[in-house]
Amino acid sequence: TVNSGRDCAGEYFALGADIDLGGAEWTPIGYGYDLNDSGAYDRVFCGFFDGCGYTVSGMRLTGGTAHSDPASRGCYYSLGLFGAVCGDTAFTAGITRLRLADISISMTVSAEDTVFAGGIAGFMNRATVTDCFVEGDINVETGGVAYVGGLYGAVSDDNLYNTTQNCGFAGNIYVSAGVRAYAAGLAGCGLYMKTSQCYVSAKVECYSALACVAGLLCDSGQKSRTEDAVFAGEIYTVA
Image 1 (cartoon, helix red, strand yellow):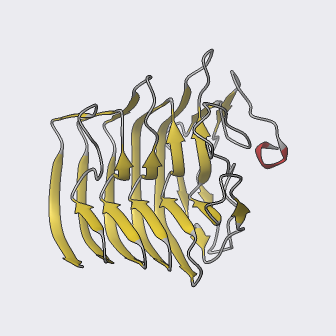
Image 2 (spheres, helix red, strand yellow):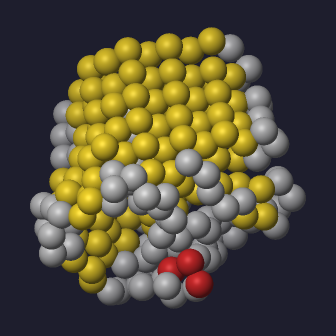
C-alpha cells in the first residue's frame, strides 16, 4: 500500500461503482510530504486515479495519525481522501472524474502541530486534478499551524505547475489555529497552481493571530494563475 511505501507511480486505478463509506473512520491514502525542502517525497500517491464519474460518500475523519517531522517542527497530520498526492520527474500524478459527497473532516489538536486538510488531499504537488467535486464540512482546530481547503490543504511550491480544472467545493470550512492559519474554498496554500473553470459555494471561517482567508486560494504568491473561477459564499476572520 501507499502508506507502507509503494508509491504507485505510473499506475492507473479506476472506480467501478459508487461507494458509500457509511460514516466509517477513513485512513487517508499516503501521508508524506517534503519536510526538508529537499525535493524528495515519501509515503505519497504518485499514480493516476479515475473516479469514472462515480461518487464516494460518507467519508469521516475525526482523528488522524501524528507523523514526526524530521525538520524538528513538531508533528503533522495530512487529512483527506488522499493524505498526500505527489508526482515525480517521470510521472505527473492525477485525479479525475471523482465526486465526494457528505464528507466530514473534524480534527482537534491541542499541541502546536501542523494540520493539512482538504477533501481530495491534505497535501499535493506535481499533480493534475480535473472534473472533481467535493461536498461537505471541514473543521480543524490546532495549537499550531493549519492549511485547510475544500479540495486541498496545501499545494507545494515547485517548478512544475499543479493543474486544477473544472472542479468545485460546496460546504463549510472552519479553522482555528494558535500560531497561524490558511483557509480557502479550493486550497489553503495554493503555490504554483493553474486553476480554471472552478466553482466554490461555501462559508469559510478562519481564526488565528496570523490568518489568511480567501474564497478560492490562500498564500498563492505570484506563480499561481486563476481563470474563470467563481466564489459564492461568506468569509469570516478574526485575528
